[in-house]
Amino acid sequence: MKYYSTRNKNNIVTAAQAIAQGLASDGGLFVPETIPAVSISEIEALCKMDYREKAVAIMSKYLDEFTEEELRGYVRSAYSDNYDCAEIAPTCFLDDNTGVLELWHGPTCAFKDMALQMLPRLLTASLKKIGEERKVCILVATSGDTGKAALEGFADVEGTSIVVFYPRDGVSDVQKLQMTTQRGENVFVSAVEGNFDDAQTGVKKIFSDRDFANALNARGFFLSSANSINWGRLLPQIVYYFSAYCDYVNSGKIKMGDKIDFCVPTGNFGDILAGWYAKKMGLPVRKLICASNRNNVLTDFINTGVYDRNREFYATISPSMDILVSSNLERLLFMLSDDASVKSWMDELKTDGKYDVGAKVLSDIQADYACGYTGDEEAKAFISELYKDTGYLMDTHTADAYGVLSKIRRSGEVFPTVIVSTASPFKFCDSVLEAFGEDSSKSGAELIDKLAAVTRIKAPKPLTGLGGREVRFTSCASKEKMPDVVMDFLS
Ligand SMILES: *Cc1c(COP(=O)(O)O)cnc(C)c1O
Image (cartoon, rainbow, N blue to C red):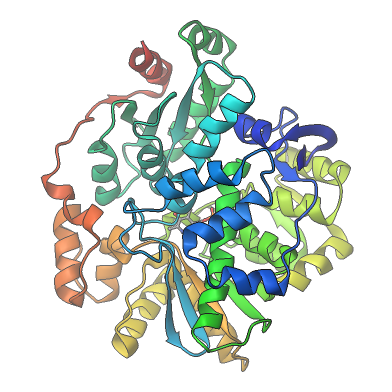
């Protein structure tokens, strides 16, 4: 199967090239040229497979340059005892009409593991397939979850190095501890003076610096990114939509072929776009509900067809969804229009901060998507209410989705729905404790113990050991020194 760029249909590459390059040279994102179909009888067969077999079956449809044997090898290491449950992504049912797909049983307790445990395998294999002999240096600016998940995914992966920059003033205690205690010979972590924007700007500058690229080349390295615009990150996420559907059927609560909704806490639009691919492949999905926090640029877009980033940015209790430009939306727009339209909208976004997709594309979007948003105080109320009613504890991002679904249901309709749960509540203990009216002023490691005591729920293993682990990375760089940090590490 070929892939082409969302901004130029004539920019055609193989799957391995798409994954190795990440972003297309014209600034567009790579998308598959066709969407492979899955029949109901194939879904029936999937329902009898474990998660790893499902992943091979779905991913192989998009990766014909990779043998099933190769893919089987990747899933064996990506989804194994690095997860704390054999189901990998279990669905927990709150009632007959409400499932919660838990995507946080991996090594960093957030859903990004689902893709970032797989991407390093796909990427190193792709580099071999295209004959690349240099090593890859993954460069990441993170506001929290991505950095740790990328570190854990690339740690000690041959032929790769990874450098992660996080804002000194912008990650939670737990997130900082997770990163600074990272194991692995090929990893480096540094704080950056300032906020996430400073870290991100610094990384972008390194990516566009030709002299820097030449100097790296001389050391046998080239730069790449692990962020969610890479097709190799999107693809593994399609699998869990099939898996959740099978869980629903296997639970006996719906019949094979019945439709369900998915409600997805959304930031960069990668997770929910994977759901859209699953639907277009033939998974019986009625609506994808796009849930936002107070940064509700996507809610407005799905309601009006106007994407407008000219608005205030809010720091919320669901920080992984604090985003004003959702990069993966570009893929959906391309699938519903054409490369010339996408290019002009993205140019307008750059110059005016907004664009309007018009009535036709809007009605196509509304055929597949519903939307809504949840504020911080509402989200906290939903966390404590659900826990009191059922004993189920959710994190702040999942609470945004739960809140949107609850508000839709208040207006009357209850349809079988899977809420996509993207993080362990213990990863955001301060806000979750506040939801219970508890004090949250202690350090990260202490808060984990406190939340466990308050809720009588065990914290995930990767988080409980954090307090006692050796801190390996303590440096903090100015924005200007970031290139030196990378170069020193690779020398
Ligand atoms: C990254 C992230 C999201 C948003 O996912 P997108 O694919 O960017 O839409 C939601 N919740 C958590 C916990 C995340 O880490």
